[in-house]
Image: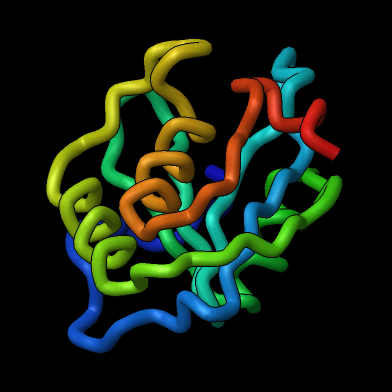
Length: 135
């Protein structure tokens, strides 16, 4: 099985670097022409993948491994402003405690990232659940 990251059951004891936050969009898998959305906060990346799975995380080197082993390409990344880093971290912790159920266009990788950013006070609007259209 290709590398998806490390399982994210809870956050680490230190606050992530939310001053360096990006939405990262990579190419999709199989028939997914919309791409895949990943949240980058400092040196860590967070995403969901699977129909009912815990979230995943990886470091910068893990991100490069993820791209290579899954045959993905980074399509673009966009910096976002998080005004309440502790709330973003709390939401990430909350979402990490349970399995994420994929729900097609209404509960997917985009809504995972969106929930964390919204909790962190970001005014970033994700416009569409098809991230390749954001660029």
